[in-house]
Image (cartoon, rainbow, N blue to C red; front, side):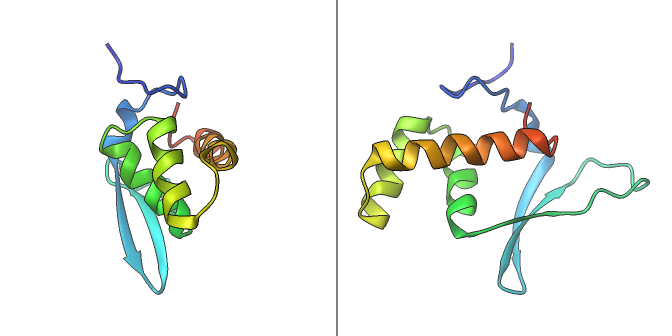
Length: 97
């Protein structure tokens, strides 16, 4: 059985990636790649890094949206679309499925 949240995405592949902070940017590194061809790390902004971290802790889109809404003083409904867009971008990059 694969792990999913309310986005419908398979989050099992998250364990392949580690987030690191370097040169003022958060990076997602694929720790399971064989080396060739080399897959470049994916850069994340601060909001993306927070979403990634909360997703990894098992929070769903509603919980993430509420928490980000509190931090940024924005309605969770406004944030929810951003979270879904972030997941879609990771899906397009092959990080999530």
